[in-house]
Image (cartoon, rainbow, N blue to C red; front, side, top):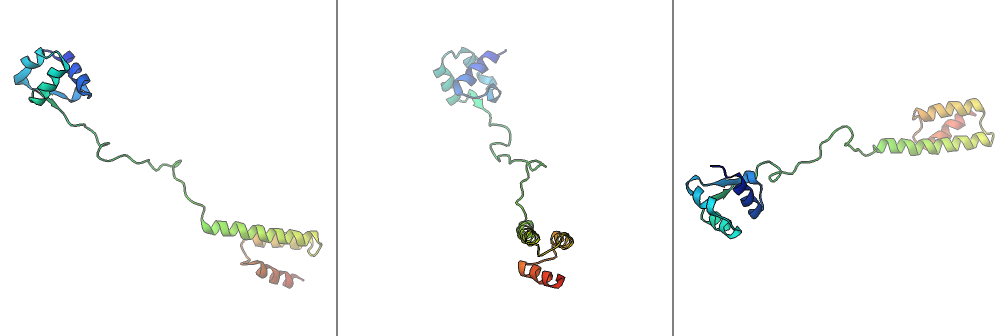
Length: 134
């Protein structure tokens, strides 16, 4: 006995998927005779129709976003930030000295290499090094 259309109707009335509808085999004749929405609700209350639980894990635990190569965002490291700030400060200072002709081109390029190598801790440290050059 095929009751596919009846299952679809029951699913529509109850607002669920037809895969969740289970019919009681002992009460198939009653189910077959049910024509109205109220008949379906009465059969549900009389345990002629059962509703399966929802399958899947989404209701239990929501999936999190996966950590792939493109989805990992890491903050810029503090040490890099410090390097950038110090390097800019030193380069500006040394370029001003070059403009004011207190340094020649050779000294300027040598200092630039040392700045890049993080040889100086502070601007005062750089000034001490300049005293040694003169």
